[in-house]
Length: 292
Image (cartoon, rainbow, N blue to C red; front, side, top):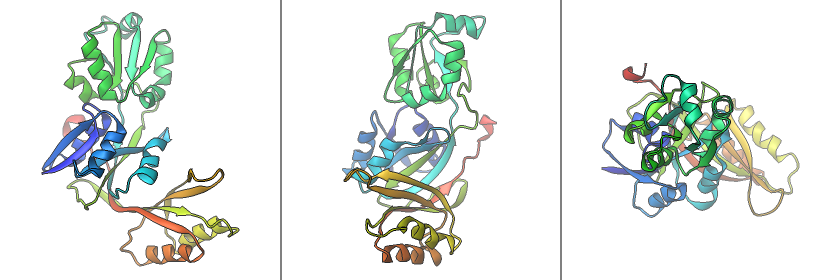
C-alpha cells in the first residue's frame, strides 16, 4: 500500500486526491502544514506528497513552488486539475433566509487563499464579520465544530462539512465559477492513475548565463523552431543575488520525444543551467455521476 501525504483532512487537496486516486490501494496521511507534507516524503514516512501549486485566479502558489525548487528534491510524477467549489457552512441552518443567517454571524474562518477567492460574497453578505485565517480549509471546518458557536462559520469544501457535521448555508460562493486548482503528486517513483489521462508534460528550471545577452530569446527560440509548446513560463528569484532569476517552464512534451531532449541540449550549449523537475502524465477532471 502506497502512503500519500497531503493537507487535511477536509481540504480541497484531499478531495481532489480521492477523486483521482480512490480506485487504487492508497493510505492518506494528513498534515496540518505544507512543510510537514513535503518532509514526510523526504524522510521516507510516505511515498508521495500532493501539493497545490497553481490556481486559475490566484496564479502560482509561491511558497509551494519555492519548496519544490529550494528545499526538496522530489520529482513531479503526476498532475491533475480540480474545480474549487467553496461553501459557506456553519452549525445549524441560517433560518428563513441566508441574509437572516448572515446577520447573526460574527466570524468567518478559512484559508487565506479561500478568503481571497470569496471577496465579493463577503463584501456583499458579510461586511461586518471578522475574518480569521487558518492553515487549511479543513482546519476551518474543524474549528467551527469545536467552537460550537452559532455565530461562527467556515468557507470550505463540501467534504469538510460532511466530515465535521456542518450545515451548508450557501453553495459556490467563490467570486469566479470557473475556479480550478492544479495539483502535483511528487515522489521518487513513477505512478500511473486509472483516470482521465490527457497528455504528458515536462517541467524544467532554466538559469540563464549572466554574460550572454539575449539568452532568454535563445532559450525560447530553441523551443519555437521545433514547434514545442510552452504552457507556462514564470520568472522566480534564485535567492542568491538581487536581480538574479531562474525561469520555471512547463512544456507540453515528454522527454521520451525526439525534439525535447535536443532543445534542452541546445539551451545548455549556450551556458544555461537546466534542472528537470519532472516528466509526468497530466489528468483532467471528470465529474462523477453524483456530482452532475
